[in-house]
Every structure is written in C-alpha cells, then in structure tokens.
Amino acid sequence: MSSEKEAVPGKVPEKAKGATPPKVSRRSFLNWIAIGWGSLTAATLVGVAATLRFMFPNVLFEPPSSFKAGFPDEYAVGEVDERWKEKFGVWIVRTTEGFFALLAVCTHLGCPPNWLAAEAKYKCPCHGSGFYRTGINFEGPAPRPLERARIMLADDGQILVDKSRKFLWEKGEWEDPESFLKV
Amino acid sequence: MQFVKDLFNFLSSPAIFFTLVIVLFFVALRTRRLWTDRVGTVALVAVVVYFVVSFFDPNFKKVVTAPDNVPIVGMLFLIGFFAWFSLKQAYENDDRMARGEPPAEKLETDEKVWCWPDLVYTELIALLVASIVLLVWAILIEAPLEEPASITVAPNPSKAPWYFLGLQEMLVYFDPWLAGVVFPSLIILGLMALPYIDTNPKGNGYYTFRERAREIALFLFGFLVLWVFMIMTGTFLRGPNWNFFGPYEYWDPHKLVPLNNINFSEFIWVRWLGTGLPQQWLAREIFGILVVLAYFLALPPLLARRWLNDIHRKMGAARYAVGIVLILSMIALPIKMYLRWIFNLKYIIAIPEFFFNI
Image (cartoon, rainbow over all chains, first blue to last red):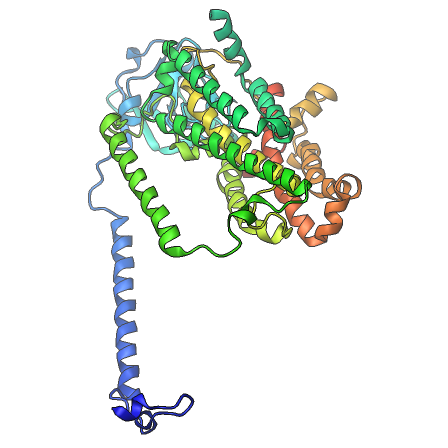
C-alpha cells in the first residue's frame, strides 16, 4: 500500500485505475430495487386498506337513531322537554298545537347547545349561538336554525322520534307533516 | 374598591377594550421613551402588583388560577418581556445609527459564532430549564381533567386549546369556511410569503425600528393584537354561553346579553329603503356583494394612488397586490368584530341558499 501513500495529487492511484468489477450486477441491483419498492407499495396498500376497514367497525356503541319517547300526555304544554337530551340529543317541544323534536346539534360547528329555560332560548357554549324555542337562530354565528327530527305516534300510542330523518327550515321542510305531531 | 372593579369590568367590554388596546399599541410603538430599562421594570412591577391585588377578588382568582389558564398568564409575561426587549434594542440601535455609530450587534462580534460550543451550550441550558419548569409544573398543578366526553353534553363554556382561542374568537364573527379554512390558510401562506413580499434588506442581523417602522407595526399588530390579545380575551373574558365577562365579574350562565343579529341586506332594504327583502338572492345581497368587491378590488388601487404611493412604486404591481390583499384580509377581522359589537351585524353577504356567508 505504500504506492497509495506516495500518490501525487491529481494522479489517479494505481489501484483505482484497474477498478475491481462491482460485485452487484446491474440486473440484480434492479431486481432488488423492484422487490424493495414492490414490498413497500404492497405494505402501504395493506395499511391503507386496514385504515379504511377501521372506518367501518363491526359494532357501534351508539344509541339507536329512533326511540320511543313516552305518551303524549306526559308532556306539559309550552315546555321544552329535556329528558331525552342527554341520551339521544333531542329536545321534545310541546306547543298548544302539538309536538316537534329538535336535534341538540348547533348548526354552526356541531356543539350541543343548552336549553336556558329562564331566557327561553337554546344557547351554544362554544361560540354563543342562540336559538328561539322553535329552533330559529337569532344570535351568534349559527347560519341556520336547528334541525327537526321526524316525530310520529307509534302503534302503542307512544311518541316515536326518528333522528335519521331530518327536516331543515331553510329548505321549507318544517311544513312537512312528519316534522310536527299534531294532537 | 368596588368602583374600581366596576370600572375595569366596564372597560373590558369588547368594543372599548379592543379600541383601548389598538390605540395603546400604536401610541406605545411610536413612543421612544417607553422602551427603556426603567419603564420596562415599572411596567413589570405594575402588572405583577395588579395580578397580586386582583387575586383578592374571588372571580378574578378563579379564572386566572384555573389550571387551563395558568400558561396564558405565563405567556402574558413572556410575550410582554420579549416585545419590550426587542423594541428596546431596536430603539437603542436607531439612536446609535442616528449618531452615526454602527448597530450594537456589530460591536458584539463582526464574525461568525461557532455552533459548538456557543449554540449547543445555549441549547443545553434551555433544554434543562424547560425540563425543570415542566416537571415542577406537572407536579404542582393538577391536570384539568373533566368528566367523560359525551356527544350530547358540552362544558359551558367550551373552549378550544389555548393556542386556538384566537381562531375560536374569529369563528364568532365569520362563517366556518372563512374563519376555519380561508383565514388560517391565509395566515400560514401569508407568513410564508413575507420574505418575497417584503424584500427590504434593512434590519438583517440587527434590531431596528425606524428603518422598517411600518412593517414592524403591521406584523406586531397582527401578532400581538389580533392573535395574542384574542387568546387572552378567549381565556379570561369569555365565560358561559360564550358571553363576554369582565375580569371581576361573576360567570353567570344566565347573564342576558341582547345580541339579535341583523344582516346587511336587512339594514339596507328594510331599515333604509323601507321596503321588504327581495326574494331573489342576487337582488337581496347585491349591496353586500358590492361592498365586499369594493373592499378587495377598488380599495387597493385607491390606496396605491393616494396613501401607499411610495410602497406601491417600490414593490411593483404584483407584490403590492398580494401584500395588500393579505393586509386587507387581516384588517377585515377587526372591522367585522366592530360591526358585530356595535351594530349586531351578522353577515355582509348572506346567501343561505348555498351556504355562502361573509
């Protein structure tokens, strides 16, 4: 190795000149690259598939979207009833004409508002949106009224609320007979 | 004592407090005498005394010592210190340069500083201090855990993490697509674009105020007033039902604040013209659309011709256009806040037909 030490700058050392042929051929290098990228792609695809599968769980621990809310005579006229709010997120409002079910989801960003009986309004704790007893928005940033759920009488005479069907005021759906239970 | 508390509560109603902060900010920024060691010390002592004295008030103490809010108090002091420190250095440099001397940084060293040991040692010390503070903090203050989450019950008030309180405040005045998507993106993109918009090389490597007063004022207005101050507002002044409360006011969940919102179209058609709202949305919202278009399309050329003539010439049309749109978007926030506080104005353009509200 003494020849390397004496190498003059600018002059290629003797050994490098007769460069030993690389142990990995071009073909096998490309094969390994293909295998490597192939496995990475496969693993990523499996990961994406597993993530997508995760979005559809086998069991959902959610309360059912429709529920029976007792008999009509259990509700006082003019009251906003809070008994189903904590479990189902629904207020049942009894007016002189009948019932409607309001979903306790703020139309601004989806926080659950509170019913303030003294002020006769629903008030959202997140950005201060306020709604009248009917669900119409009047203060704060909420852009539209609260949504109503389908409400009807079940065969056994109880009130049945179905949250899967929503009625939006701005689409004129509050005129729909299923959004309001007449008595 | 009660009178003083009432006065502070009154002054911290949003429109008054915000105006005070803006005026104080710009006056203080231009007052050379404030940025000295003596005034800084006096201000620090005054703020500490204010906090200590106010601790005797149960409502103040409850909000300020809530585990969630302790970091904001710390942030108040930290940001105050660094704002004061940098402006002090900037003004001292300005004085030096006015006398024909080089900036102080030039005297310190004209050469490069070594990564090792200068930087690494500083970082090591910072790391140790931060670890100790976090450990002591974690031991002394209990984690603010709440009841298990429920989709039908939210704490009242429901507050975002402290660093998002500025955004949450913004969401009160603008629709989610603006306050939650457009404005945050503009903030990030705008900050990224800053070095391309502001190509003034003055102030590279040394502090100065006079050489770039307008740029510094604009940036600090966005950062201190519109970001830090809004975090403070959200932390200390926003109470149950997202109402405003004074620092010594009891957080009454039944506080009644009349906030009936009115859209711009109703102001025009119903109040001024005395007719009803037109049915067709374009006819109904035409005035609001014109106002917004004028704000973003007519105002920049007007400013360029009248008040920002020199800036426009220096920057060129493209750079000026990007910069001025970013600035106008920033100013739109305080404008909308005042409109809401004073006129209860909800939307300038309100098209619920396809969820387009400004």
